[in-house]
Image (cartoon, rainbow over all chains, first blue to last red; front, side, top):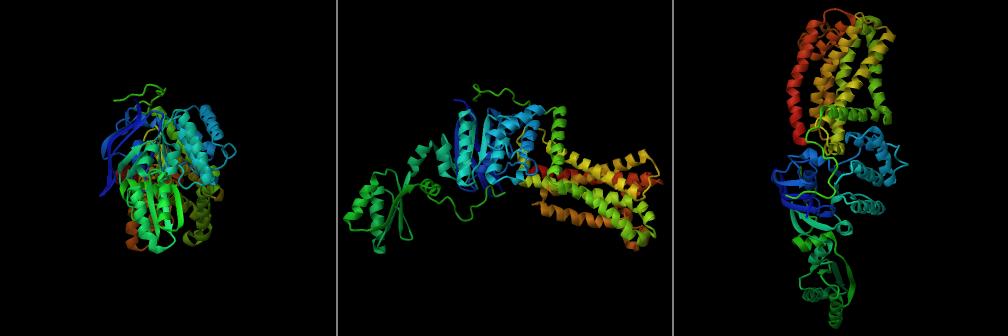
Length: 320
Length: 270
């Protein structure tokens, strides 16, 4: 098996805060790894180390067989980075941004122009190519950003929360672009806070929490571990709350959460739900609300870690 | 150890960037800083308005009061204004660098296979060209208003060379401020409150002997005074050597202090 990205025991700390606490990653060539986790889990720190922007305090990492610290220069010739931290020059036009990158990658001027035109066309930015990037919408800017990281035809692409802050339509558009890159055989490492995004795009997912990888596998495997769906039951009468809690806990095999009159439990198999409904009916409990929905990242986290993804005071990546 | 066999890249960069390639990258990045002016005409205005405004204000508003005649004052003040403007303009390096860092452009550049120094060098080359533009503007407008060069082309080029050398030394301080400041606004406040008193407590605009004696002591040490006097000598004639040497020593001193600090800040923050 060939690995485009390989990391062993990566560590990075800022004072007392451990941004990364012994992370192992492996991305086979041509696959897309989704790195899922809340703010401050260490996702961006990992990306910055792999993209040669940050030196790890411990462990080592390789991109296409080159060490990210000792052979950073070779790594840089193989990667592209788009995300929270890499950006386009807002005072330049779309064309100028891309031509500049092309020239810095030693393309002759004519080639750099051709490549810029090609990428703008691919990202639907041809008409806006002559305008300064500061006039672009959020979605356009993100697409230009992605185009900028593709100028050099990278083997490995890092997408650090590429859709954070985008409206649903722009998000779907960007997903389309990422899928096209996958079919071109580009290896992608994508970080996201959205379970749905990882589910849509990733071949494999790892879940980060407090600087550690706490789970990994294909999206289906992960959902199976975490419980794919969530059952919510709100009894019409408050007095029935304990009863509902007991029934749901009994049939799901794990005690459910009770908050504000709502019983919430993770459902490993949807076939159990009718059984729960029947039991509640037999007991004469009327449910004011009964719903089955997909697990949110928060619930996957709860299932995997026993704590909520977003804890107060856990905001802010890397704490630097 | 795993290796990539299938779509092995045609070109993996060699571990070192050749000097010719670095020169090209620096030129590209300098072009980038200059082409920004095209989309942000305010910047050109900023580069040009201040010299024009200061020259006109000082000559016609203060000139008569300070020197008795505007013509005489222009001959005295223009070299001082040139020196002051050069110091203020060195602030643009800090602002531009800080913007690049906070907006993430710097990170994008750092993921490219180019020399580590290229982004910084590109910016400084562009800022140096802006300094040349401001100098030419001062001299051109000055000549129209009645300033006379008594030395010739060599004197003018000498003055420009001295100013640029000093500006380069100052750019180390600008890099330090640009890298360490949290945002652009703080950069401007820091640089302004540093430059304003330094440039005004010199003989750039007013003769030293009109000031109180305690201030005179500082004015005589102030590098801006030496720089202004050296430029005066190089443009209007008169003794140059002592002031030019003192200015260069100051430039060397500023470099010795700020270059290591700037490099260290650069390495730790970036």
